[in-house]
Amino acid sequence: MSTAEVVRAVGGVLEAAAAGGVDDAYWRSQMLSALSVCKLLAAEEASRAELGEWLEEATGPILAARGEEAVDAERGYAVAARFSTLMAGLRAAGDEDSRAALRELRRVLHELCDREIAALATAS
View 1 (cartoon, one colour):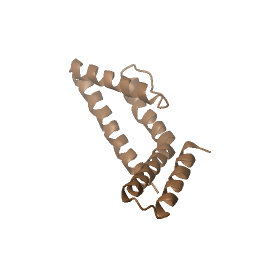
View 2 (cartoon, rainbow, N blue to C red):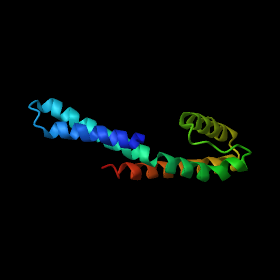
View 3 (cartoon, rainbow, N blue to C red):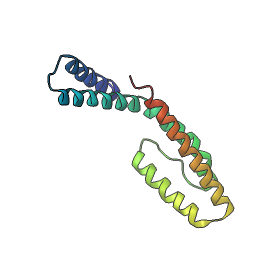
View 4 (tube, rainbow, N blue to C red):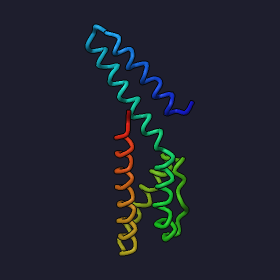
């Protein structure tokens, strides 16, 4: 089973338990919250590869123009740290080419956020 399938299965168990008439309203709400988290995690996991490929493609030309290697989206934390350092350097440089690259990276990251939100909206 994929990670997304496992998370959906756990969510199904929680949903069934919550529908089973748990008397304690607090615990029932906790199970429903856990179900919601499972659904969101499943949607995020299902979109991970597509979003990663898009990020690699969208940032490739920006990075190449600066003499930087392309990112490997599979290494999420390393990519985030690299972008943070790169963006700080671009801000510090202050020349027009750096400002243009910074604007383009910000545009890509904004679109990535929009794509992630759209993926989360598919949670079911």
